[in-house]
Length: 111
Image (cartoon, rainbow, N blue to C red; front, side, top):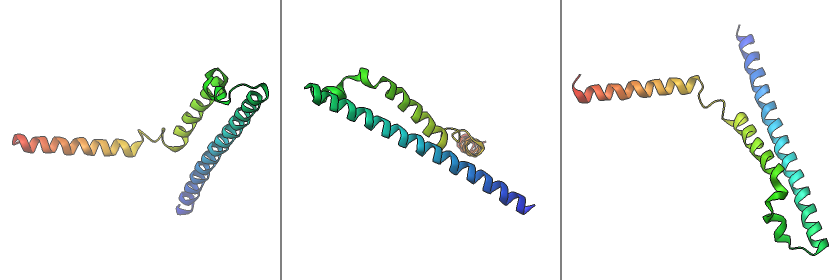
């Protein structure tokens, strides 16, 4: 029985590490692609005599990367905290908190 419990915990831990690894790969890929496109834009601006500042201020160049970044934020929230926000531990803590609050109110009111 205990052997089974240990293997289940190991599988959950292994799955968690795999999710984190996928997120970091996603992040690294996002950063590399962004650096390539920003570098390409700066190179073009220098080649054509345009201002380098224009590469960063012209937001039309970065719409795709903006939305990809939003998706990356949601991916991070999923991996590092979003699904665990309202888990069973949170419910138990909130129930205890409300019971304690009600108990304190009853003591104040003389019940």
